[in-house]
Length: 99
Image 1 (cartoon, rainbow, N blue to C red):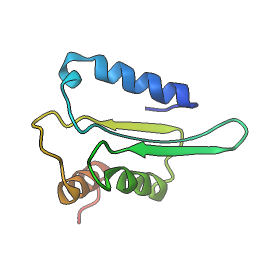
Image 2: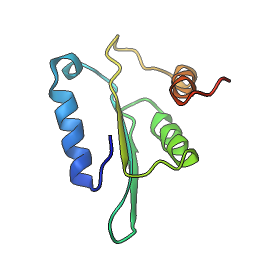
Image 3: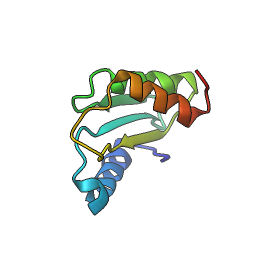
Image 4: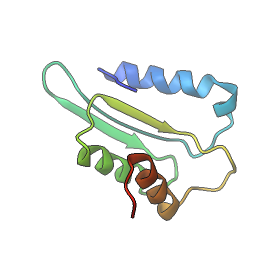
């Protein structure tokens, strides 16, 4: 989703997590990069126990010059973490890379 400020990021995550299909998700990962009108970059992540996932996603966003963007991953299939290898495979699949 395209965002322009931190309030957009917070509102986006609240809306997504209010959906009953996502409300029970655990280990939610949120990453964001946005530039304010002043040109100041605000980026960050919360990987909620998925160690390294947020950093990996931020690096991916930087690699593809993504800005004013937020992503929220809500793995709801189980209470197990994705793990770095599965996350990397999903990232490559979503970006069209074949590694």
